[in-house]
Structure formats: structure tokens, C-alpha cells
Amino acid sequence: MTAQPSTERGDLTPAARRVLEAASRLFYARGMHAVGVDAVAAEAGVTKKTLYDRFGSKEALEVAYLRDRDARWEALWRDRLAARPEPGVERVLVVFDAVADWMDAHGGRGCAAINARAEFDDPRHPVAVEVARQKAWVRDLLRDECAAAGLARPGDLADALALLYDGALAASGVGAGADPFGTARRAARDLCVAHGA
Image 1 (tube, rainbow, N blue to C red):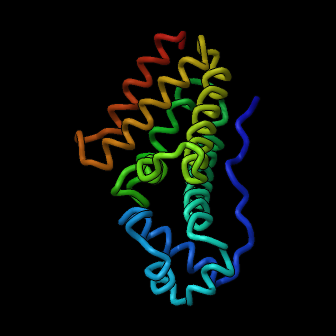
Image 2 (cartoon, helix red, strand yellow; image 1 turned 90 degrees about the vertical axis):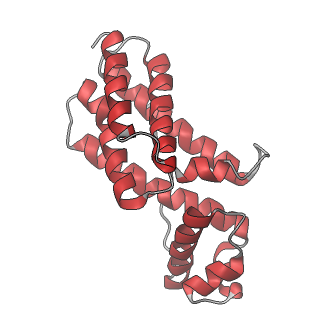
């Protein structure tokens, strides 16, 4: 089964787009619990009523922030895959090059999804559910690419590659290692070779 796009970007009003952009900046920089709707509304230049009219609740805005960021990341990754149409190990490894570029442009604090999940204990909370969905589609797309490359045990390999991917994201967020994405890419290549590349 091929991994499906993670989310459809709906049409947002200009005010809703400003709210989402403000929430994205603030939630990523400070965390969801630390940022209230007053701060988001002020940053967006709207009233709290407008924020609630557009998103319904802070919880829904938190999920919308994660989905929007994820949709933009997914679009970048799929563009990079499209630029390398032939199946193979290099196509599998595209994720590490793409995420390094993504984090250079949009990062600094590691993975937004991992950071968000750390704030919620309940695995049934909508933020936790959204993070689980995002991590599953990354793993599923990696599995599909491993299978297309003819690598042995693509599900097991995808699990290991997803751990390298998330580990590199976490390391980049805390400043661990000089080149976490390069290190993860090299380890991923070794794993692919071990699986029959």
C-alpha cells in the first residue's frame, strides 16, 4: 500500500492564514503549553474571537499547525523524490538530504511533531494522534521506497530508517553532533547495503 499524502491544505481566509502562521512561529519557538491564544491572536493581529471563529479551539489550532508544517515537509520530500524517479538506495536516502535542507530553512528546535508530542501525556489527545499519524506516514513511505528498491525486509528496514530519521531530528534540535543528518544518512546507507542493495 502506497503512503498517502498526509493532509489536504484547505482554503483559509487571510485572517486564518495569519493565525496559523503566528501559531506556527510561536508554538515551534516556545511550545504549545507555553503559548496561549491571546499571544497567538496578538501576533496575528486578530481578535481571540476571530481565532476561535476560524479554528474552534486552541487544540484544533495546534493540530492545524502540525498538519500545515507536515504538509509543507511532505511536499518538499515528494519533490525531491520526483527529481530521482528511478528506484534504488539513493532514492531511499533522499529523506536525509531533504530533511537537512528543511531544518536549515525551518528548524532550529528539532522536530515539531516530536516536540509537540512531548507536551501531551495522553496518547488519545488529538495532538498525540496527529503526531502518530505523521510518524506512520513517514515510516510507510520509507517502507514503500525500500520495497521499490528491492531491499530485503522493507518493513523492518523502514523501522530502522525511521529511527535514524527521528534521531537525527532530535539531535539537530539539541545541537548534538556536527552533522546529524549526514551521520544518519551514512548509517542508513550501511543498513540498505546490509539489506541487499
